[in-house]
Length: 335
Image 1 (cartoon, helix red, strand yellow):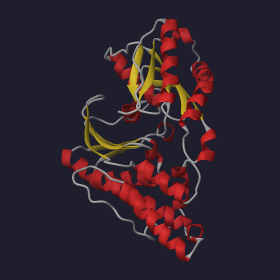
Image 2: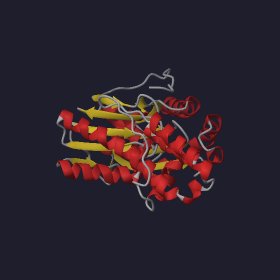
Image 3: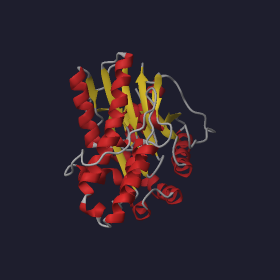
Image 4: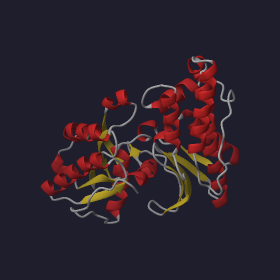
């Protein structure tokens, strides 16, 4: 059975992992601090940092797994979606690694990898959901409700029609000058605030689709009006503001998710993606599942954000199907 090296470079984290079948042997990630001063990821700086990080990160992943490059049977890589310049670094490295060792390439969709992170085992142990299950994928740029019939039979039940949940949270953090990345800061401050202190508009979208642009705009206008009378309003009410905007976004996410799970009769529900690290969302999904008699699956925190372990597990299942990539395959930014 295969030893797989996987590469993730879709945004601002350079990551490499080694899996033996579906069991994780190592997972190394280098994060980029350079973007903090700009309040968001700068694509050109991200791609340059990937070039600096890719070789030492892969080397560390191999050493941590106690193997050499020649032990690897295949290399999986994130092909997209993501920042094109960043993806090109990972894709190019994977191609070179494949050519040098004459081993197959496996392309991986970044979003599918987030969902399949639930199937990673460590020390031969795991807690994977049973099919069929519904997964709420919430990351910085994507929000989708997906019904999984099998590992790669994914039916999108609903998705955002404009901004994603992560974008709305990050925008709220930027408006309040909380720094980057803003999501974890809002989550931390919200624990000391009143989630019902302020109400923000929630859009009425048919079906299971989402829209977060209205929530973001409602929050912006509310702060603008308050700051006219009290220039220190944000500073004085930061915890309540964080708790209220988080409560609004998470409540909207859970409302649609619960309806979607009921509609397809599933008994297993999961979350995935960067925003799945949010404590209010994790608590909300757990409570919802308990209330409805469902089984809830929360990814370990280290597998919520971008990482190569999730790329590796998706690559493993593709390897079993014999789905190998052509050396000429280019990365793609959207998908």
